[in-house]
Amino acid sequence: MSERTSGETRDDATARVVPFPAMSAAPQIAFDRHELRTIFNLYGRRVAEGEWRDYALDFRRDKAVFSIYRRTSEMPLYRIEKDPRLARRQGAYAVITAAGLVLKRGNDLARVLAVLEPPLRAV
Image (tube, rainbow, N blue to C red):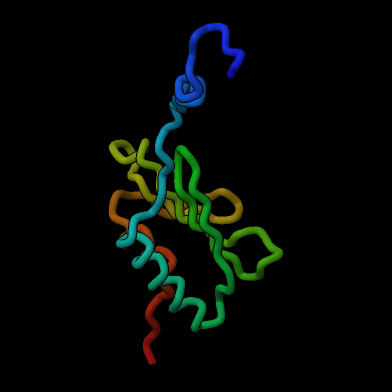
């Protein structure tokens, strides 16, 4: 015999589910596959040349950042940022130096990354 006073059965007591409060978090901004392919093509060429050695990805709620390092222990040489809030004004993509100087900004990632390409030399 059970000592339940409210007349509930065992199934009623365990079947109650307390809903978790809904999170109103905005979706996280990230680079898509095509954007990452474009970035890693440039990054791979510069690693092969011996100029860059490490990278970091940072996905925040307001922007995505790809940081490029010469050495792991240093500040990033460049940051490639994707900020969709600026897409209509200045462009969603930007290349920023370690000092905070914006080298190039625009809506086409390949054209923005062209500022990091080494200049062609006549041989």
